[in-house]
Amino acid sequence: MDYQLIQSETNAKFKRWKKLAENTRFIKKEGATLAEGAHLLITMNEHAVMPEALILQESGISNEVSAIVENFAQQNVRIYVLGARL
Image (cartoon, rainbow, N blue to C red):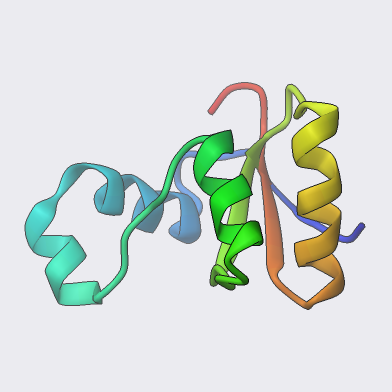
């Protein structure tokens, strides 16, 4: 699986995601939001909802979720991994 490792808080993508997590006005402006948690990922997969991207923690993911992540990766969903410090 190909992924991009994000290791800095100054990374433009990380800063955008942080704003999406914290700022309602920014969510409306961007027309996007973040969905967090394994249960939402599983539901998205079950209902064939394609995310723009997946953002994972470097610390790892469960076996149950790893198969779903691989499935999305095969469908050209961008995968980002946050470094341990983030």
